[in-house]
Length: 226
Image 1 (tube, helix red, strand yellow):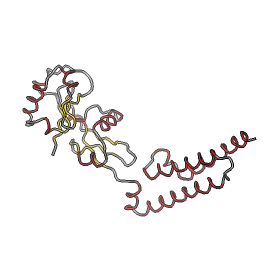
Image 2: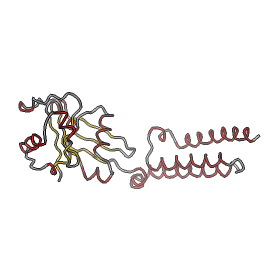
Image 3: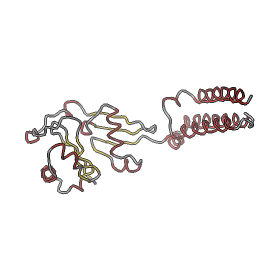
Image 4: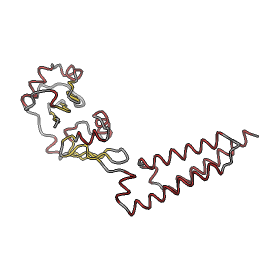
């Protein structure tokens, strides 16, 4: 009997959770803000709580679930009317790359590191930071990328850079002011070569650079610390 009761209760809770999420709107499926995520997690936890104890009345789970749905709908309604409240609950977009330059202050404030940036650029089918004009971190965590104009991004490399033979993704040579020796090894180059190249570009110390890459065409991307 307990197995049958658990089976029936599970089906009922499933349809209740399904109904609550439908009431909250399709917006929840495609995009979860921090506020939406908290509501969804709490509903899931309440559902598990009801299923774990068969002696607990279902109302003790249903009432909190629909209370959370009402809270979500009320906040969503107020957010439509009040932009400031909407920014409090949903957050603001953050410009990570602006005019081709990395915004380190924004990255630091959002605890968004270079590995996160490179991963999401690849997901946007962008392999080189130097090809990006703007990158905006949306409140949902998605990165929106605006690439440079083709005629600007695909400029031919300088003659002295044509000796680069590495074929593949752009290699990070410096990250957070630290030289990436593995990348230099792939290029068959040394720190001495890197230092000379940076000096030609007006950089006199590795620590002056926040992020530096080079691609197989010999195109550099250098973002200096402020």
